Structure formats: structure tokens, C-alpha cells
Image (cartoon, rainbow, N blue to C red; front, side):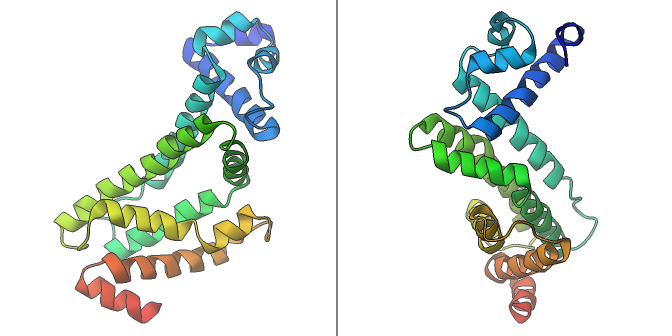
Length: 216
């Protein structure tokens, strides 16, 4: 996008354009290798345009993490309540989360966080607050309603943390460590069923727990 095109953007569109460029830069060059000067050059304008929106690289990284995690969780939590049984909802949420966690961009983001957070704690802090904690909060709200309706018998925050731990297990680690380069939809669906059964065996009501244990 050239300078003339950027000037035609609304403030919100221009901010999103900056975030698009910054996201690509962080993934490609890492946190240390990304500079405000390079991002400004990619924008095709002056540094003033960039600094009008974000005063530091840390602030820009946090904004990128905020936007990307919001997009991810808005998609995952569109699973309707009341449209099916609770087990089906857990399986579908798990499948969506697992699918997202195995995507190239998410894997690249996780590798970035692991590689950079030792030298730059702000990277780890932003990822923890914007991604992990946000996911726990969204799941906790969903599980609190499930407990109120009698579908779960558990501490909702603990249940949320445990589900995310299960999802970040087997397939995600293999993908993260480059043991496997891609995972098919059928494999993801089978893993989502396995994770849901393990989760519901521990946190579901008596009927769901018994049914889940028989499927493990």
C-alpha cells in the first residue's frame, strides 16, 4: 500500500494497517529484530505517523497481541449455547481452539514468545495477559454458566486452565517443536474428542463424567 493510499484511510483503518505490518515484522524478524524505524519505512510515511498511534515498540507489540487474541477468541466462542448438549459444545470449542493453536501464524507466535521472553520480559507478559489469561477468562465465563445449569461440578477457573493445558499438549508440542509440519482435520477432530472426554471425566456432572470415562 503506497503513501497516497495510506492517507485515504480512516484513523481506525490506518491503525489496523500499522498492526498488520507490525505483526508480519514481529513474526518474521522477532521482537529484537523489529524496530519502529523499519515499521515506519514499511508504512511509506514519516515516523510521526507511527508515533501518533504507538509511542514505543512495547506498546505496539501489546496492541498486536491484543488484536490477534481478540480475533481468535471471538471466533472460538461463537459456539452457540443451547443449540446442543454441553458435551458437543465442549468438543467444538476444543476443536476450534486446537485448530487455531496448530496454525502456522500461531505456532510462529509461540516460537517468538519462547525465543524472546528471556531477554524481553514484556513479550512474555503481553502474551500471558492478552492470550492465556484472556482465554481463561472467556472459558471461565462459559463454564460458570454450565455449573449453574448443572452440566459441570467444578471450580470454573480451574476447569478453564485445565482445558487449555490439555489443548496445548500432544499435537501442539509436536507442531511447536517441528516434529510434524501439518495436522489434518480428521486428526484434529479425533484429538478434540479425546481431550473433551478427558476434561469431562474430571469436570462434567455425574452423567457426563461416566459417559466420558467410557470413551477414553
